[in-house]
Length: 267
Image (cartoon, rainbow, N blue to C red):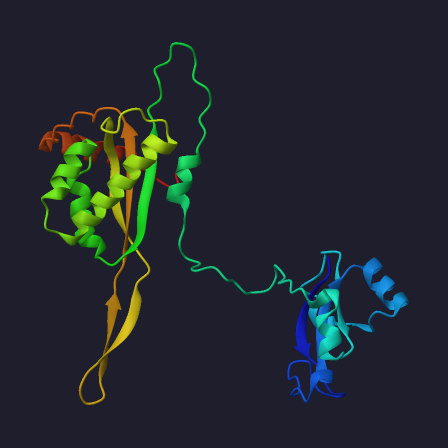
């Protein structure tokens, strides 16, 4: 398929980096990306007069296509030609996405497919990953609420968030209800209440920096903060909470970490 990008025609002796002004419809030209066979057929049929455009050779190297510059044609004929369709090359640094920095790795965990279970093996509990991004709230304030419901059953977590006057509590409650619906609809969970919060955490979103104007020509930088909230639901009753470690247990772990160190430049 041929693709074309309209450009301005150029006068002799003018660099391709500084195109001249369009004086009328006849000054309209274009760049076309063609295979060798298509270019030869166009030239033989007289459909267009093509000249190789060397400025795009680096971008089309190895793709099997060559970039040609067509002669200027009137607008009415240009609109009726097939290479009016615009094709943006993969090598071009043009994007039309809403954002480039937002990762979707958390949601993709819902697509994990485990191998079949053996006969007599206990049924693997369902796992539901859900999140909400770019929340106008501080990630530090959200973390306290996320930690509050960690390890609770979903009914108990919803009850705790219902009577919290924090802004983030209502947001987390909405996310939990959405995840609960996903569990029944998409993950074959039989009972809505047979879920517990396996993971619950917050993350830093895309923050915006703005100028805060001060007196006497001075200024400051203020930041409009956003955060993400991530939750993982698992099917089944919540596991019992682990008892807190004693000071002796912490000391044993610390000594074991020291013994596990790797001493470099030795035998």
